[in-house]
Image (cartoon, rainbow, N blue to C red; front, side, top):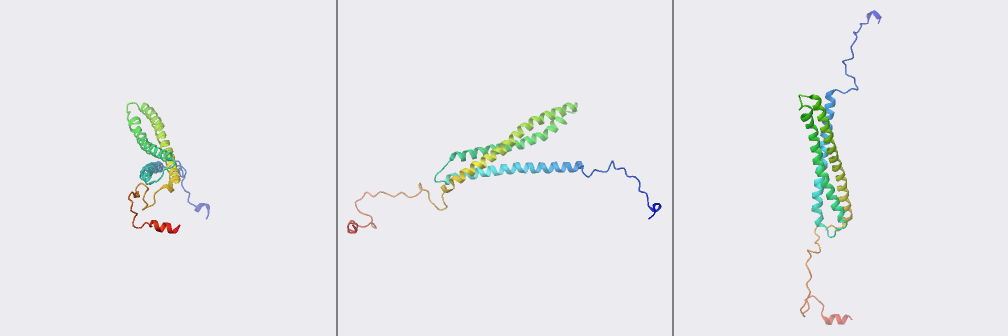
Length: 195
């Protein structure tokens, strides 16, 4: 092809074309939405596991014949309780964080700059106790699981087997006070003959 046969393409202004490395606002909002869903699901999962583990261990303890290192179970229960309370406040913190935009940033229509400053200060306070709650949830969960696991590992042989009766529920042997021997007991003459 000769130069004169080529069609000249008009110059394209690339300033409006999206940069392939710069995400669109829709992509950013979608990613934030997915991150929020994963965060909420993680908090709910830890709350569920902590509550189930607490309920299981409360039901497990009466089936022990002997209890060793009981402090580990108490530490586990305390850790799981702290984890559940921390998880509730963690979720509440995120709720208040998102409400702060409505209540502070957009709530002050007379002075938007003061509203934004108020919103930033509110979110700083909210983030402080939300993070504290998050650390309590995760830390309590680790302490709780470790305490319960240690207690279970030490006391696994102390659990009653299915169908096994504990010593307290076994029938007591009665002491014979009568002078007549039981029917299946050997006679005194037979025991003297063996000697």
